[in-house]
Length: 523
Image (tube, helix red, strand yellow):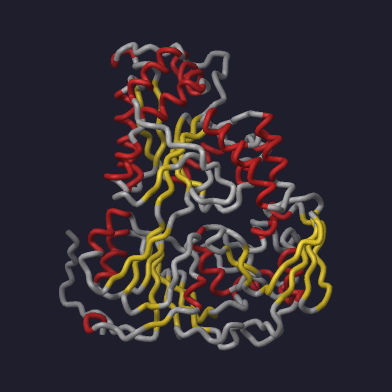
């Protein structure tokens, strides 16, 4: 039950021409060169339009660009739409694209995205509407990277700090105000937008960190849209309110259980710690853990059925997915047998079970409740599972250093299968002087070769078999235990129409949405 106590207060009148969008976190930046979090990227694309967006087929869809061609494996020729302008009316040309992509690593810029484009040899303007990207070596994922950055004016050269606050882009909306103290951004429609002025005059973005409060704001008609920042358990409450509508889409966020495969450290390491590390390095133990987790029960109870079992990193229906894989069944007896075969008999609860393991999780209510279920499942097969709760920022630093035993998290969104290179390639095992996403330290040189081959080919039909082999190998070795793909959920006021939820949770479709009149409760 949700209640609000308000003594002697009156709800301020809402502007009927303003769509109110609620988000759970404050964006760290709107300049696309410095926007890294999901919410920052979502909002940045409303202000700084990208060349392409990601379609529901997970391929680049034209936006500022009309098309692209690939004459060879190293060259991408992009054609811009004619007559593009920035918010202030100045023309947007190929020179602005060259500046945006070609100067990310400049001393006065130092974009957080510069590292993703180190394979870019050069960017050159062939004319006002034609841009050529030349790579140092083949990189099939580059087409998707053309969807990532909104275009920044070339006149921002040497004026980075100024441009980070003036925020002149070419997107559907312009920044009217950004009150960081009140965590509120107001955007107004761009009359020069290449599709024509958006039907919605203004968007107010408010940061509301508490899920219950976000839900109440929708119920009380103080907001019009929430995307993704709503747990499946809240949907039952939403359905009780006739003025609210729900959209869902198959999600691309891959939830997984990561395990540390490094094995014992040697030396004077604590014997029980060494036993745990030896256990997690054994594929039989990892498969036992997968059999011990009753994931169908978790999806049915904790996620209200709003998720699909994962068999690997790529979501169902993905063009490179190995559709022959099936979810690992819940089978605690098989788990116990595998643990026995691996040399980890149940020593009894007082003696530490088969071995102990620490599951890291965050204090977020849903994630913690799921971790508690995981703890019970593992204890049921004799593994002495303990829970450690810490803020993600703390856990992330430890995970990056390989200082963990087990944690559950998400990769989001999984669009390009080249993500496997970052997550599973042996060259991406992190160290004090080397960043990498292979945090469990999985090593398989044949897998490395498949992933290397897959990233050099642009044709999907040619690439797909390499990733299908990789998924099959990962399903055998289980450096991750695949969990699920949660459905994407958007909750909106009925007066907001024409907004189409995308699989990538983009806010860009607000450029075509419309607002109806406010209900009597909101006036």
